[in-house]
Length: 436
Image (cartoon, rainbow, N blue to C red):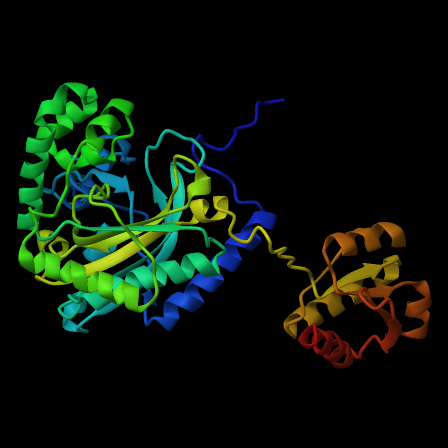
């Protein structure tokens, strides 16, 4: 016997019983997000590598260490003179949404595009609990000429908070910060370098490199020596312009007006280079070291940076695996049972049972059967496993009388109908579905 091939490391199968949780999560997500006026967008799973390098940042850990690249596509083979293009599986959703916004000229169609997505992302993570190479995110992006408002920042935070609560993650901590404008970020970088200059010997090798290339990444490091050095930082927003500080104050006032509690964290910068102004993160303490369940912020320069118009934007992403790990839906038993299961006990009745099965399905009744004859006991066991609300029984006695028995599995009652009384059977089944 040949050796079986297992799932690639860092990925996971979502089995049918687990898929019910995912379906419920997606259903609730679409309902809540749509109530805020966001519309779904679906982009390819892979894009040109340059898109992520230019948006996420050449010096970010995602581009430097975690990108999953595909083999270069030899475009020159079919288009003489063109160069081979490097493709990468998307590590996050924002860059693809912005690329689509620019390419489809959405700025010409609406003053603000409110978009959401649900789907898989890919990174070359070191597989561990809460960190997979293929993971899934729920995200929203609000992009356009009229998207620059502290109230919109507060809206995306409120929306993410509402989503987490609806999905069962209620014990979260919201951390917020401001990075100010691009110019403020430059001043912040210089401020950090001065503050950390005396501690550079305590930084890990990676952070020694980051010190010059992108000092903000030092703030994300989990190395114990780096954490001790960072604990000594005194951050007072003196590097942020007055206008940026005022914008931040208005965001906080809007959150307070909604009754949303938050903790200010001046060291919060997020791991993506495109952020400006507001950044935020929701963490769940019971997840341990990988405690972030969602994060986001404003990215006012990214659209123009990728070749589009000078419009502002803000958004967030929630990790679906992290939400499930945090205990979402764990108190709710989801059971997706059939409306009815067909039990046939006679070879001559198989064709009649099969025809009735299709008639029921055509009328919106979920139904199944065992396509090989078995005992009443074994087929009733299958019906129970399928969580069937009703069982249709067609045996020798029923065939002789031209009838079929409909057993209510909850009430224990049983009725007989004519084999051609499909409409009556459907009414009985669907009527009971309505009063569940």
